Image 1 (tube, each protein chain N blue to C red):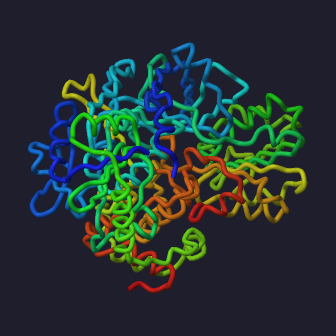
Image 2 (tube, rainbow over the protein chains, first blue to last red; image 1 turned 180 degrees about the vertical axis):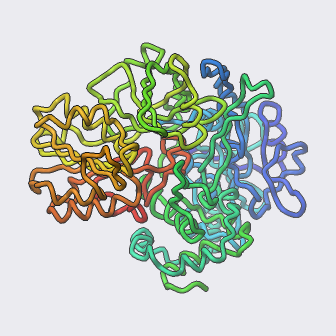
Length: 340
Length: 287
């Protein structure tokens, strides 16, 4: 990797410079919380944010997008071109970058999804170090460290940033848009101290021993009925999850009924009809079965294919859940057999 | 974690959501609710590249209505056309039923894992279907028929609710007189015309002999049926990994992404829809 040091006061120059060639998306404050939004004024960027309401997935996999335009007559596709403008996602935390790598496993590879991939290719990622919030548990999955998937990663060292450039493009934008200098031995020692302090700051402990086995072995555990009783099937957990990728597809006709668009929207396995088939059978009819499936898929289904759990411990679902269901409590309940 | 750089360089020219135009070349009424449609993919290159296995499915796409997963009923040994046996049970299947011969719809696929035809060769085959479950098995049955010399004894047990709901009756009526297929049909509610068996398909196991060391089973039917048919096959000492089941789930995208067809830790669309019983046993909530 290639390293640079940037004076903290100079960082807005980077945002300003990037804005001349890219649409820059960064965390900004909105009603006392933080959201990723297009940057209007570099001064609005808040790298001290705890977490954003929605994860960065929407910039690659929007809540609603058109897959293709069609003509009803002859069932013809008129246009399925994938357009993505050059964009920079600025200020992503390690968990959110790791989440995108998990999404990549689904949307790339066999049957690669051109919509996701085109945006991914057109987007630069600039990460920034974080500090633990009251709901995050990324340390449990080792997702508070990130090694791939970003172009530049900025580690906050008080008055300066230690910038790690993973890609040629990342190194290029730093040199073009912001005053920087080469790294000294002192900078590297300070970097080591900072990242150790950072790791030490995460003290959330969750017993994840043999989770996939427990999910199978305790499939009929009454804890799922208890969580099912609490769950409102609102799907908020899926919407705010940086790794939930399930979607629905439907056709929308123009008023003339001759043409239309096929759109896809975010969906959630927590919605009642999610696993229902045409003849009336619903394979996950109860709330308990749906809550269980969410964990079953994240901690076992995905893992069985990609050797990672489909969770980065960002804690957004714990914040969003109106019923107070927190993944840490669910995993603990599975271990102990008791819902606390 | 995988290096994101390497996965980004794959070819993205092909859009896997893009349905290919297919012309309806034949429509046959099978029952009040089911019709057999024959399709021909219009693009010659697409048509020639379309190779499938029995047990695989396609996404039937009707713009303005949507998509539905339908298993292929024709045999892989017959190329150039695709047969789908479709029940009028939803928006998309309803729209298909309203189509005429010559109309164009969309197809994409084939998707999923089918029956292990090559592995089954050299063995006896026991096929058990219930209701519309005959649709994917019809592909396997006809494929076996076309390479009949490769197989030992072939037994087909097929249960329907009543005589009016028996699918592919034109073929089975003809096959009743063949001695190279042991075909037993049963209905729950017989009428005066019915000369076959009566009762659930599981009752037919009393009438058959199974060589447990040399038999592959294939099952498809309504969700409630699997457990009982598997029980009967196990009573005949068939191996868990030689009993194959085909599941119906909500395979919305067909390509392992949308999440709707999740069963246990797998996706029906890419990991199935055909699983052996050992695999299915390990899919919590599957049977």
